[in-house]
Image (cartoon, rainbow, N blue to C red):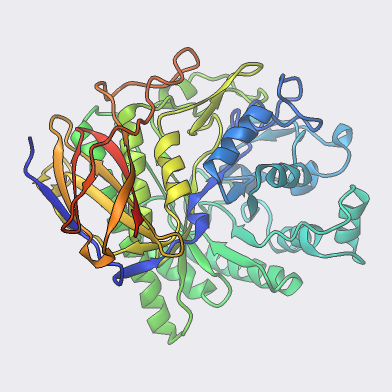
Length: 503
């Protein structure tokens, strides 16, 4: 058994309050995310609008507070007007980002209807690739202005008398990427984003705007991109975006499980860049982060290269997730919580079928992938104050990182409910990890449950035939002792949720 790890938390040492939008997700017109995912008119569970009821139930279970839409790379070539008005009059378009045909059966208004049914808000993106200021101001007028203008009255003529009042808007998507339609330099993008954002806020001053940060930590322009874009948009934008995906194509599990160490560094570098620009401008405004694309993504890459172009909703980016992927997602969630003072929104990309926690078969069932569970646990139990984690852990070196702690952990304190939840991952693939947690500042309490996600096979997956192969149990062994400590043994390669009730 590995050397003992220790964690000390104090109720007065607070990192920040969790913004519930950190548990957001993402639906793009890509693959079967929309058609066959949230929408399938002839599915046995479909409602009167064609939305799949089984998928809606799983989304509600995750308690997703905000969903980014309609992209992603898709938005940089999207004319939003194609997706409003009578469906039988909407055009079919060649969709260049993913080389498919977009039928526009689902558009802005239908997505807003779906959000209401799912109990979530929308994070809308505007096209700053092929379009710009005019498109952005028209869309927000259509969405948010009550009536008495061309675009707001057009919305009313489409059957939506009341404005949608979407409050969160992305100023384009990944504009630093050469794969992006309308790819721009940081100066080109920063100027356009600022002017589009100004016009949008003149239409509706209550909205919040997200400027595009780097598409990944590995981009050659990172973090100069952030410094320039923020310099040009600081007074208009409220958030800078941050995107990152991880994979294990080399089958190097210890290094794969260490990837959130790089995520911590990525977040901290973006925060430092934000603070540099704030100091440079002598501004009182603190820039916040929207980590609005994150996940594991690599399994489907080879499969997608073989797809025929110009079809409707082909099976793109359908990663089938393993147990080790769930552990990495758990570590990434902990990374987000560790900077809850600055990361106020985040979107697991994506929600259904496309690199997603929920999978479906057209005409068939929906089921939970392995990564569903850490996301569910964090969303349901990870709301409150994030506490400073003082962690001592045995460490290891991977092929990319040194001094990687076997224990990755964070605690969230819900003061009004008198609850503390500890999320912890044991990265050790061969040995259990003894853990001592010092909670003396909280006084007395008891263990509600110790949930564990574990499996003997790191490559185990959930499928339509075996949807419960990897699922959590509540047989963890955490014990609260009289001296204000919790003693637990974290199973090898496990995700753990230790829920406490204070007295």
